[in-house]
Image (tube, rainbow, N blue to C red; front, top):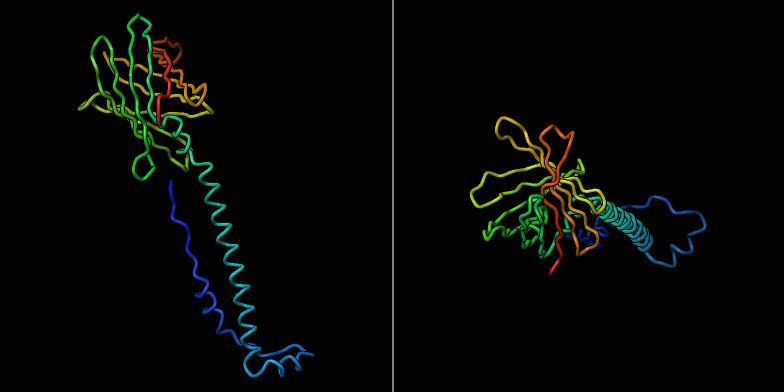
Length: 220
């Protein structure tokens, strides 16, 4: 996330300090005053004040930049970068069928969201999915929204990022009951991600594995 750097014009500081007047000169400086000529003492004092003011302002700017860097370092949005690039994955459902997919993730133009498009192939059919990730910097929490296919109703939920493990949580209603879905993505290294999808129909007391597999980064 780029931020434009602060611009600073030293001549404005000098102009701002040049109007300061001195009403008293320390004892013992008369010879210096006579040697410098009329008005020179006032000019030198103004320059000293200008230099001091410049140093103070530069220190403030430096501290401000350091504070911004600290915020960036703790920005949860940065954690989403683990999925940047192109990926290929293969997974197996518990009841036997296999599925493959290609995935490409990139930052939104303003770098606030991670946008991922995925083509999933299963039983000879291909579907396209779109997922958008976002993070709340104040709450240090992230969420996602997925369109399982063009025109489909969006599904959304929370995603907790702890170290190299992402855990997604969502639920849906069907046949008069609530089904919870829990998905984990574990990045075992920067180019490999192991995933598992589990479901629960009893409020999270028990979970059963629905799908598991591996994704590998191929580019980007």
